[in-house]
Length: 303
Image (tube, rainbow, N blue to C red; front, side, top):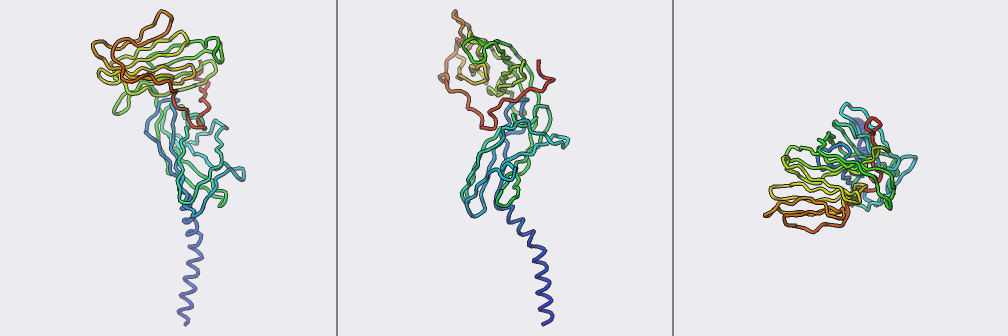
């Protein structure tokens, strides 16, 4: 009898010790947070868009919302030497999110306008979700990415014409080349150096390294680019003053090679070759809410 009582006492004490741990493990399983990056390497000012998955394992519907002075969604970004990268944007608030029991919600968030990740180097990022019902955080695994410089190959500064928003301001178009492990990509960047604002930096697609791209400015000061993406295959892009991709199409080299020409009225057109797809008038897809604000150049990069 005494042995049974002793056994019960030991088990009871063990449960008291283990209960907080079991509760913590159970709580950790209530919300699962996943963070994914599409690739390892990005160039300076290119959007670093994370895919964030949040799965509700609480067994009931949950509401994620800011509470107790704490945003329900946040990120921890550190540099290669472990230092914390501070947020540079106050526009990171997310609207409340309701997730039904057992459901997974996916969001895409651009880190580039939110954190000072414009210097070359390796970065680590981890997302956290604050669940006010339990007053606790749930964390994703850590993702790693590298920011690197691209090689400038062409640049032109133009004014904004009358009749367009912000007349009198200027824009600088740049074409850059970056070599990845398995291919080379051509990038375009649009910025206002006077104000230190980068409006867009994105890839125009793969490029054959030994074929220099062609670039022309039309009478509206929009940029036209024609570059070789593969043997006998060319891509044409038209870029607006704020970096929007206005038109894009593909050409095949036939008896003649495609080339950009300026017409008598100051427009720019592609001559030669054979078009494969009609120019798309649909602009480049806009970034998620968190990336609506263009990144600002550090002072030592302005002018």
